[in-house]
Image 1: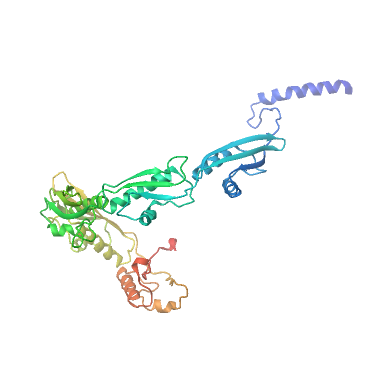
Image 2: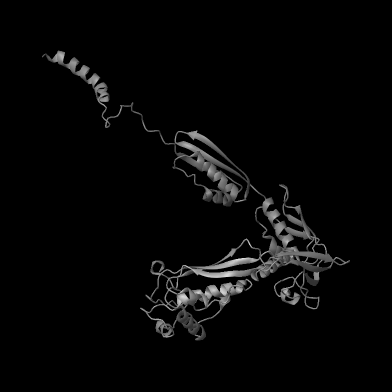
Length: 432
């Protein structure tokens, strides 16, 4: 076959090839698509800041994620705007873009808030300016933000209420308008209200003297020092009295309070009105989930028995007792929970102690950590005061006794308020 006749035939066969391949149904073949060039990336040619001074420009630039020579992304620009607005330093943030051969120039224009030039209080007599300044959270030189000023007003008003001025009102004279240069609060203190007497009505299970030990609102010393009316503490007292009654089995107890002001408006009598309701009785006590210890052995150690009135303190003591029984045999991570179950019969409940025993643990590695700038106590001094050794079955009673010996040794600082009390922590291997 001549060459000039062969070339057209080959071209014709090749033109039919895609149709033949597609008709074959082979799952590995795909249809050809036109070639497209990858989209061109637009870069940030420059980032320009329009601010009041060089210091502000430096701050703005530190907040931006839009940077020169990075890819231009409008969403990142908007995120920068939101970030600058959230600082509270600017009344407005604007952005502009300009296309140039090198890419896009992004310009940020910020309008700063005025700064606080002064902070003043008008009308305060019972509380000094200095005490109020410690409460408002404002500082001279900070941006003048009306939301921050409103928060300061609220804090000052709450502070007055805690100091016995329950009717105090604080108004903003300056600081909430764009043209203001500082902050000025107008204080309407009202009367300083002190507690004259505290009464209880409706209480039968506990005396008024006993209930007074549960509350914070009380007359001052000789009616001269302390005793200011604090409405927030008063509400806390209502909650404490309610919790006190429910801990004794009065689950339906309700506590209210009444305020009676004297003619001068400076003295107030508080009356707590108590509706005790029925006292719940424990119908049955049971233990479930125990396998290592007989039920009778556990039940005989419990203080709260069937037929007794419910008592939260006794129930918690029984939980600790069960925890100690298991902890003395190495079951230091046993999970024991008390579950009071209320019945349809009014005033009765069943008490179920649910136990998840887990497994017994032995003492593994004993690590001694001695804190302080220059600790000089040897680890052996600590180890000699422990009554537990590696390989022993853990007895929680011995662990507590070892802890008491460390605290009474006077070798280490013992200050519960500062958290410097010597203590023994038990951790499973996976948490070490």
